[in-house]
Length: 139
Image (cartoon, rainbow, N blue to C red; front, side, top):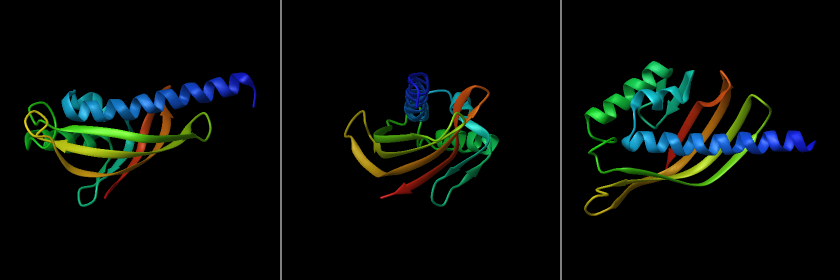
């Protein structure tokens, strides 16, 4: 591997780590449209019992969680992402595994509501890394 190849791989990994962090931040307090754009057009969000397929459905799910005050501004929730491992397969595909914690009542009495694992398949689309498939395992 040349030093240019290695540098490109490191830059890809950093972009992917930032993408994973940004999705968590947007889920808690950001714009849901920006959140949905971080998934590929045909992306999937696979939460047990509530899967979403395609960017429009992922956006609808984010809006639904906001309307129910499960996440988003005013919900006093936070997604904490840790132990992130990224594997860049080639210039267009990668995978990432990370642990998540989902906290509620963060403004008063922080309570760990659930924790689990994200397994992300990523694809470069229009020059940017996006999540093509997010598998969420609770526990």
